[in-house]
Image (cartoon, rainbow, N blue to C red; front, side, top):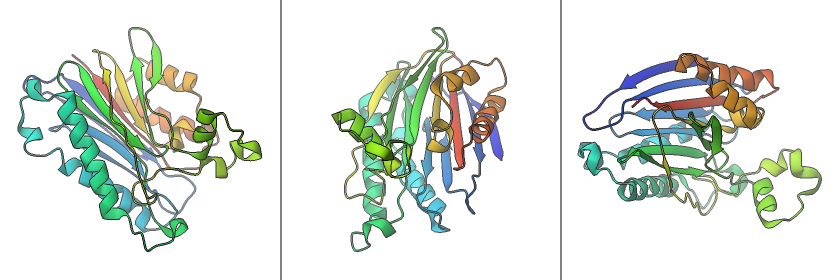
Length: 260
């Protein structure tokens, strides 16, 4: 397992603390990836599909392509000029670019190696912009209210059936129900739908792959995030708890706490 913790302060920007933890599952290769770009205020996770050597490479390629869209001029802007509109447009553009680069229409759907994505960009005015594709998620812990909010909806067959009120039958808790309806590089279209959320001092944004959120109930996730402990310790406990709850998949969590 790997974990790391960083604290950063940039001119006009909120002071933030970052911690990352990842734990390989039962597969031969950890296909999860993460990216922390503090200069751009960009934090993300991705989960490469299929158990293949190239799965993690695809996840990393998607993250890097999105990060490229947040370089100049965005990264050079004073924090007070980083609007949610611009941040959302760049995030969306980066995801679409990554999809175009990785999608191979001549390859059969079941053989394409795609990736999920969940990312946030820190903008001015105590706001963050988020976007996701697939089953990786963004949560926001509201420290003062002691509430954990889930900010994204999965792009899976199960989530679609629940949205439209269509019974998913016996597959509701099985592997088929978790089949992705959107994945960068795998499905024909992706719709990241960037959204904005306010972010107060003490709040923690959690980006995680489904290896974390699938086996651990939201109430338990919230209780772990509320622990008064070092952020890297909290991140480590999250991925360990996923394993203790029977999780077999790779588990990765990126925690971003606003300090001021």
